[in-house]
Image 1 (cartoon, rainbow, N blue to C red):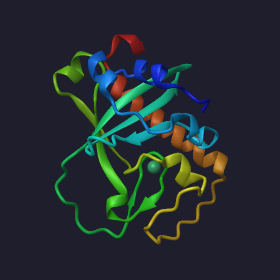
Image 2 (spheres, rainbow, N blue to C red):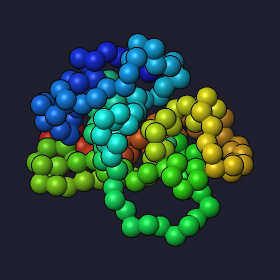
Image 3 (cartoon, helix red, strand yellow):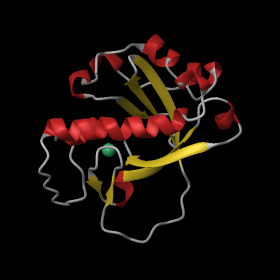
Image 4 (cartoon, rainbow, N blue to C red):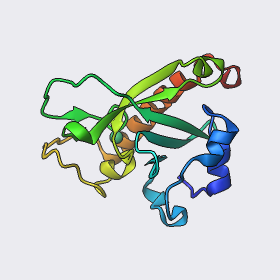
Length: 171
Ligand SMILES: [Zn+2]
């Protein structure tokens, strides 16, 4: 994605109040992020560890989504867990269940959408092999990198569609 600055990021949030968007802790060293390797911007809040954020280009505009790590019932000890966006397999804590308030009235009433995503929200870097998982899982895919990126983008769009669901602005 093309590099974006703080005002654009703060102005992009669709599922929280403007006041909340002003207070969000942004990634450090924004200008130095590996933008060319990012399909979307995702980060965990350095000051509030149960929070995360996604900033995605959607219909030609930036859409920022606030996420919270769900307190989930401990799952059975499966050997690995797969991110539902980039399909990278991780060991237990490498993937987290994130929930996003829906846009508009539904979200204000506590309506959320949840999905499993790489816990550090660095899907773009796992797909490119810039970051490696600690799962030790050998996971050879027959897809090319381009195909994996296309799949991740479409998975992310599907998640965003659910976050926007019912909001008049998305119609
Ligand atoms: Zn991922």
